[in-house]
Amino acid sequence: QPRTPARSAELLAAAQPYELVTLPVPRREEVRRLAGIPVSILRLRTPATTPQLAIQRRDGAFAIEVVHHGPPLVADLVVEWTDDGGARRSLRPWGEFEAVSEARARVALLLSASGTSAVELARATLPRSDVRGRLRAVLCNPTRARNGAIAEIASIELEL
View: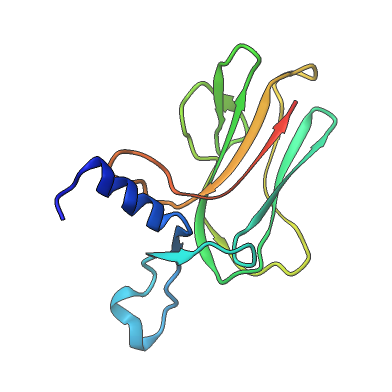
């Protein structure tokens, strides 16, 4: 069918229960040509396979943690702090916030089943002890859509 707004809305509604995830391909003889290259697939979104993020805040610092029960997947971590004035800053890999949009705090994280233990993905200090606003962490697919959008796998927000 030709692309129309109604058709696009229909396709978006049909895709809603799915998420785009990237799976690691193990290095085995039978998959030699794909070995080490992550492969993106659509999978049904279920609570059992979606990683659960948490933000732990202690003494002016915070930690982003994950508990994952699903199959292994590759994801990037985006951490953003939006202050009361609406200015948005992204956590950089070295643990500092900068006024850049959608910088990745961690890239190509290999998430595997963690059982009941939380795994720390990032830790940083907030710029000031009296900081206000909102802290948001997002696990997303490492590849972006053509329009630059990210495919969220899991997210969490904390009011500061």
